[in-house]
Length: 187
Image (cartoon, rainbow, N blue to C red; front, side, top):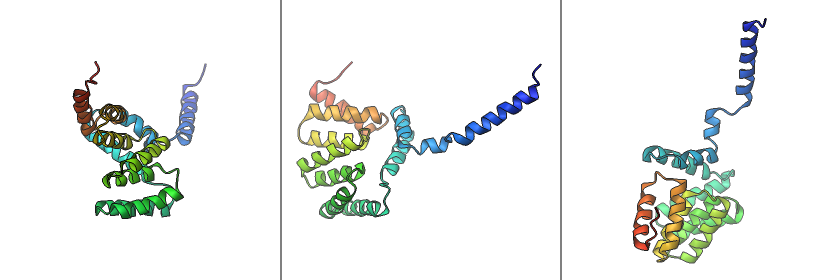
């Protein structure tokens, strides 16, 4: 007969070994991909906003203090409506960290604010190549295409943003409006 105390002890040792080598819930939530999965399943606007903010915070770190400083300086310049200065910082950032999607995304935003739509579209495309689940870039692309009166393409971009971040009410509103304008409503 098996001694139940030995079996319980063996299970406890096995459980401790498993938890010691497996990622904790906190470590899992630090992974932007896990957060993106949670965001795509979240319907509550407040929880969606919290998850989106966590993802964006993680995406704002390039792994280099110098590159992160360039991003912060660009964001400060954009806050001051100094888009020329922002583009200068972001160009240095994209030159030195070409695999950092957020640099391209922010430069696209700055170009858009300067009404340089061609440059903005080129940069947003690069951001989406590097980070295909960048809900902000998809929404930004939708805004750009809508502004350029490319309503069908804007609707597709907003729908993709909505798939990634369904709790974002502004995106849902843009989808609804564009569906009405284009006749693109689906059942």
